[in-house]
Image 1: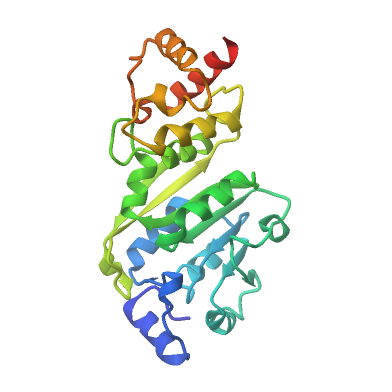
Image 2: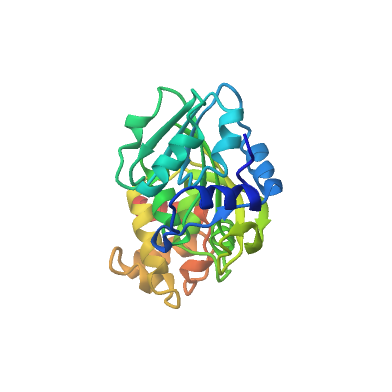
Length: 279
């Protein structure tokens, strides 16, 4: 079978089928086999693994995943790609295709009773909602290897007091360890997008790396803290706690009472909540 993740392989499929690129789905297909190899290698797929692939497109990554995994469940939203994928992989008995929106489908209904691995080339406009759905629903996921906009990757891996550091950074780092795999220049896609990409791997924690008394409250105050970045933490959280309580907790943590939310690490946020709730 011809390799799909090449300029020729992609052009051949597009010319063979009545396919029109859908801008609303952020369709940019990988045409660099070297990047594909890095994705497959870093995901550590074995013949014992079930893989959930989100947005297979024309199958650029699907083909390589099928050759390395026990089973592949590919979820594709674009109905015009379903006959293409069905025809391309009809000879693979480990391929299951689901025509649905990953944000609407009950993912647990698709999965076996064992840990899975996720691989995806996510549309830029919907990256965060998809990742947070995967993480928040407490699915049996071992790792998520994804291609995202380079700026998104930087946001996920950012440190405090950095312009890329935000609520999403803390949310991602609550659920998983973020591993950078490689940068992906825009020329590695067809059609060429307006931005560069990166491949990252999210290694899911069995339990969070912090000990926090109230997880729901943790995410609530993180959202408040980054709602207006220029505000001090005391002012940002004053709708939830008294300013005196916040100041007392910051002093006990040896932090400046005028500190802003963007300066605190995930552990410091958990310490802050634990102290406020204790006092």
